[in-house]
Length: 209
Image: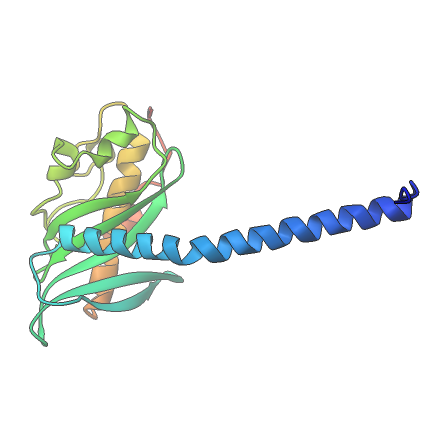
């Protein structure tokens, strides 16, 4: 077999073939994993919904709400065909290490029922403590009525005790809860809470992790 002549044309041709093969392999792998990833995320979302709202019948009624130019997923937990027992709302903010994605649940009367961390990139042993469902930081939100409380850390004049040495994470988590409450109000046809406009931006003031 004759050896291919070493030239710029042949080198470019070989490189092109290699790129096409690699692209084809990536497409095959993506097609094989895309549905699995979507299924895993759907299962994770379903578990988070069940965790943050009172017990309900059947599947939640899914809808979306647009607030401040962003689209938020709202899951209504139903009892029968007409009674709403709770709202599970997906919310996200920027934390210390990256996005913090939460599912925040509200009872029908607007109290926070519970919260669930869907994903995060916070520091292990510091901001990542927010994933501990039994911690004081997490349990303090349960039963809180945002209409009667200030959703901000105490350092900023609010009613939320921050995680020790993790102010940025605590602010981000609390801001995500406030954001979810505004979505809840919008979903019910009410005006969003003006408190959110006064909530400090993540990273402002003080120490953190």
